[in-house]
Length: 130
Image 1: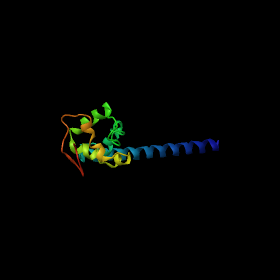
Image 2: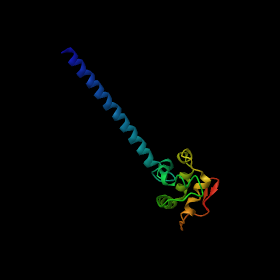
Image 3: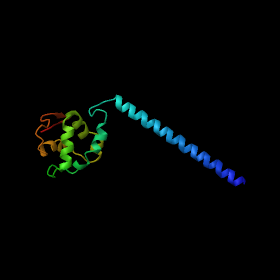
Image 4: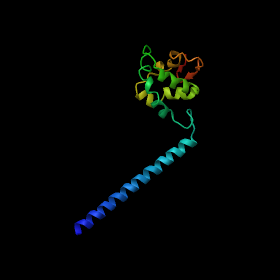
């Protein structure tokens, strides 16, 4: 009987601890989202780091200027190109650099996609969109 009570007490403690950890996690997520809503940057409510993950289809094309550019990459670049400051922030982001993106190659993607209304001449740090 004593062992059964001990097991129930330990299970209750474990359950309470999980509940506390989950609650703290949810509070932190809510705080992060709240700050994201108030802190609109180059990419609006999303960060350039988050947007960079959405450019996964452009990985090869952003490392090699001779690599083909996929339709899905071009569609995403066209969407980002509506906001050139966001496009540049994404291309120059830490996430992009960590993924092996070469900024000097990445800035050529809008032209390689034949996007007519691309931001030609827009300065992206040390680079200019062709």
